[in-house]
Length: 372
Image 1 (cartoon, rainbow, N blue to C red):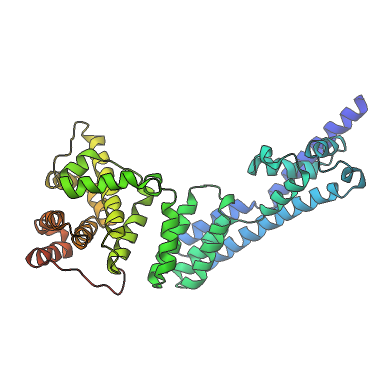
Image 2 (image 1 turned 120 degrees about the vertical axis):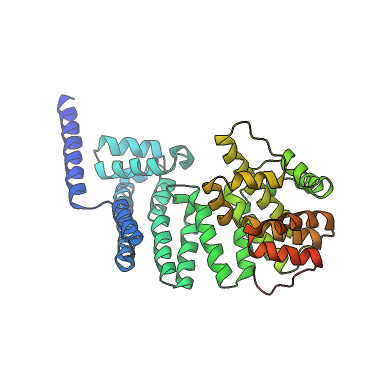
């Protein structure tokens, strides 16, 4: 018994030393990826691309070896008689000191919840094999092709990264990948596919994708009680979906889908999220702030450079202009007039100031052939 214990401890220590020594010689795949990001951010795109491809290859090689280590054990006749019982396979591995197979299972359990394997060794092997995918590397390869102007290749890489999203280190990053795809599809004027991908982003928007009763109530307040009442009653801070709503609102308006309103609904949500972010930021430095009117709100915005940058980033004035245009298309002329009047008094709104003034003189529906 003591001899077996001594041998077990010795094997464990030796495997640890060997693993440590190996890590000193071989760069981990994640280090290679980070090196590629550094090169990318410094504009060395050719070397960055090679690093991203190396990272993908290194990860695949690592998990392929782990897969083979586990296959080697599962192929043993004695193990095959264990009837796919993962608990019994683990016991066998521990008792026979199969350190590489044990390491493969530890890595799997770190990446994938053991309880979801159903105590199946076969399922464990399948999931281990799937870990060869490296969505982050696929994404960064896509980024490199994008900045080099190879949009078709970049789009394919983003699609591949999104298909592998279950293995993202940051699960929420799949939304960023979708936005990259949406941007390229917009540039390529592949609008139906752009719409489909933008709607995928909104699938995670519980308020939008839930019952229409809440949306209808919000629209009713906006249309019947006006914008000041609307922003007094409602707040929605899901900033991750704001751009998808805004983009779809522009798209639906440009192609005449505004009567009645998908354009109005999406632009209303984008506008509400934008103003919620603005109001929350003001309250951070002025806790007693209370929204009273659009004109008072914009005065507070102009006092804060961070909010001036924000309204430019989210196309605040453009959103207001097209929300008014969509409302006009829905037959809600009074509310459209309110928004256009607001813009007409804002010289800082630039193009949207002059376009709003034109609408006030003689309202009309714009006919677009492309996204605005």
